[in-house]
Length: 427
Image (cartoon, rainbow, N blue to C red; front, side):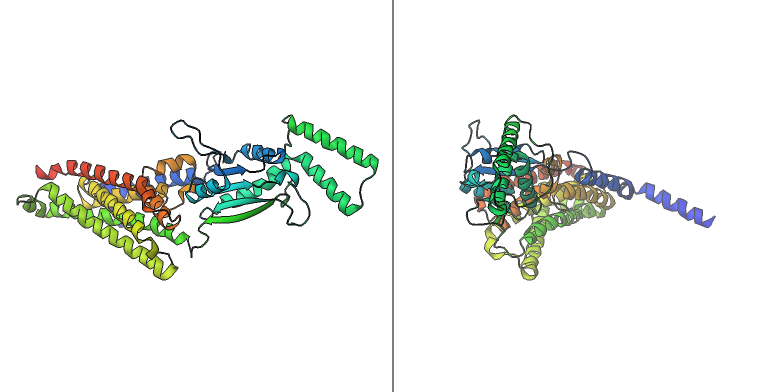
């Protein structure tokens, strides 16, 4: 009887605490849904990989290789940049493709060299005369380069069966003493059949596994000279998530002041609600920025993060991020009526924002729909900006999209918070 009374009392307390009730049932369902979309078995759950292809050879073999890559459902093949104001851009070159990878337009660029068509496939050991496909990669994406390297071997087998047969006969002649006239005739007939079948569009339906039939050499063009480069990504990702918690907690001082009557006494003086909230915004921004500084200094001291050479970019992104999260915290505090409500609501919203915004899992590995949803979060824009600074070594002028969005978020959220806070002026 005593145990049942204790259970009933606990249930009544839980029902009265709407915040705890929400966290107990809503938050797990929300998180399950988000991660089910990211990791689930849906056909569209795996994001397509963008790959830039530069065909310097312009031969029949290189054209077939390019067409084979375009037919891969897991790839989005780009041979030229996106049109600007409706005007088509020139095709990528090796130089512009490398620049595009450095700027994050694609994680991989494939450069098919001149002379590839003369000796596209080889079954023997690599030699200097064998043309080598260059794979320019952004090493922050550990999946895309490996996948592209494997697909190049697969596509070579499925898109160039006649060339494989020709190369095979050449190696047979070289190492096995040659073919008889009748064997040569049958082989040529077979090669002719494969070529006609390929040109008619009836390519090989399936292929066995194999590697090395096309020579591929990978080169990291982003992050190759950095010490422990992923530290900057995780410092930004984890840092922004905890900044949101810090800002919402600090903004909760408004609720404490309202409950204790301090807010009424302050507003009865010469201090206006606008100036009070601007003061809170400034303090919370300084607190958030200080937290970021500590996070990145720790990364520099312990994990060898290259911090000091990126100070200007860090300051720009740090200030913009701090102001945005401070405004976010003020909005939550203005909407809620008690600390309990603020704790529950902030936990729910911040964890959801962090999961789809890239603080818990890199956005470039998410489905495309989730990547777009992440753009509605502070996390995504802040992480993108810090990535430009610490990973891609881009100048401050390239940060304008992230800076503009974060400042617009800060102004909008502060304006809404100020409007909601009118309830304290007329209480």
